[in-house]
Image (cartoon, rainbow, N blue to C red; front, side, top):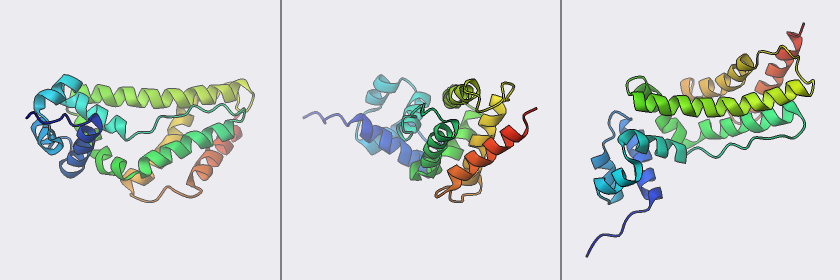
Length: 187
């Protein structure tokens, strides 16, 4: 009797667990197939390549980003930074983030995934910041790209490089400090 197909969720969960234990370099489609109880062909039919499977697994642990438009730049940024904090604080993110970044330096297909993911995230922040500029909450000559760096970098650095908590009021502190600095630098 043929084995029932494992759900996509089961395959992605197995992929995350293997990534966490062995890193991207230690992930083989054979291993994922065995852990999920499916054939390699099942995985390749659905994802086409190892890199696409890794991307799908990493994407599966990311929550959809809500693009807020509350009418207040501060409130919109708090929503975005809190979403980032939630992601970097998740058990799975902490287990696979560094390995994925490392592998992306050597594998062009994974680097493309990384670039797209970063561009998507930055695009959301950019739209929110530009609305703030349009509403007069930031000066017209604001360096939006730098503000995005200043909002995202402390969260990612603290969570993944220092391995410290980014919960509590950390989001509020980051947003308030960045907005204060941005307004103070206005001509």
